[in-house]
Amino acid sequence: LRAWSKCALLTQQQIQPNTIKFDEQSDKSVKKRLAPVDAMSQALHILLTQMPPEQISNRSCSAVLQGYGALGMGKEAEDALLKIEWMLKSPLEEGPIASSSLDVACYNSILHGYCKASKREDMHSAVKLFQAMKTETPIEINTGSSFFVIPPMPDIISYASLLNCYGKLGMASEAEKLINSMMSVGTTTRKPLETDPPEPTIACYISTMQAFENSFDRDAPARALALLQRLESIGQDSENKRDKRSRRSNRMPNRIIYNYALRCMSKHGRGEEAEKILNMFNKAHPNCNGPDIYAYALALRAWERVGKINPKMAAERAEKLFIEMKNLSSEGYLPPLELSSYNTLLGIFARAGLAYKAECLLHELEVSKSSEWNQVESFRAPEPNQMSYNLVIKAISRSNEKNSVTVERAWNILYRLGYPKKGDTSRTPMQLSIDTLNSMLKLLSKRGLAAEAESLLNAMDDFIVEGRLKRNIAALLSSYEATLEALGRCKTIDAAKRAEELVTRMEVVGELGGEFQPSLLAYNTLLNCYANAGMAGKSEALLERINQMHEAGRIPSPPD
Image (cartoon, rainbow, N blue to C red; front, side, top):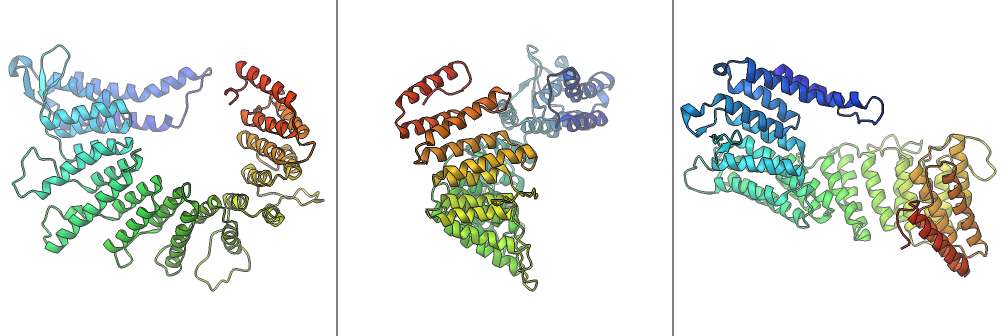
């Protein structure tokens, strides 16, 4: 039985990365995907038809049900369990209602299967089964048979499985209600009852924090912080009483719980709360046992999301946190900072338009790979990647500096990556991507430097043809749109004509089998050029064309 269950699991792991393709081999793909189901059906067939009922034990049933659970087949696992219950029970001997012949581990396999699937409909089935176990509500094991079994009471694994379901689906209110009922048991002075829920373990708290992380509730971060503070309070109370045998001792938050709380703050963009948790983490685990590099990185990413609302404040606070991380790293309390932390701060600077600070940070990264770096220093920054340069150009683009020097600084970054200067005919390798060049195009479009934008776009097309630049259709469409925007802000007389030629170029590429067509944004930008030039007739004609193309299905959206 275990062999068939393991066979089903291994088969699923082998075919899981594959996608079903609609070709001549599609039938074979479907058959391969049915292989785990066939294997589990064979295991259940052996259990129900070949094993004598008196030899069937909880272990043999678990061997099959755990296989269904590991595959995320909760519904199939529950159907199999009811078939086993029907076979093991005799309605003539024991009446219409009897206790289950299977233990709680078998029922936990079903909860695990529902949790593994991570679907809302499976979640409802899991809750229904859990409530039946908790309230000892009889379950009809065969429709129309009038025969019911009373399921076993749930144990800590049952509670943990349900909380895991809540965590994956972001059902914060349900997870919070369940964890509170479990935590309330240890706070009473009465003798525990058999119907009381078990005390939560670390896994239960982690699942609850995960539910807050995945929840769309606006107050989810605040509730996660309140739960962490409550755990600290209970843990501190246990330490003050110095009762090592206290049932509350396992509630003291450990490092994993703090990290999951930080994950919640990072996802919801709560920088203040993230730093507060870092301080709590340091106090709870002093003597160099506090937050690790992962915890600090989560707090830094929390400020990154705050930057969408208040970029200047987020940049200031994130920079202070980053300096603290660097100091701890140089003192040996943290490992060397990874490039992802630098890029996170560069992204925050870019959103705030702090070009000078972004360039200084990039210089620090570039020095680390050059001979300028002092080998005596204990701290060394990682080498920059494409994302690093891309973010610095974005910071320059969003800065308030309007002089030509800012554009020249961005060009110098491209030159350092191998972009050829004027008159350079050599085909030296470039460390550039379309995304980085698009950031430069957006900078040029914001400054209204249409001629430079057109020149860069033409060079990009040449680089793609020569194989020096990797083709990316979605990014290339953005390149054309940015160039059109530059023409829309250009004050020259022929800007409308040049924009019209660029849109025509895009249409021709599409008609010749290219992968992209002008978007509604591109046509709107061309309309803007016509408006700037006072070309009312062309504007009305283009608007009519847009309507016709939308009706023909060539443009998904109508004129806005």
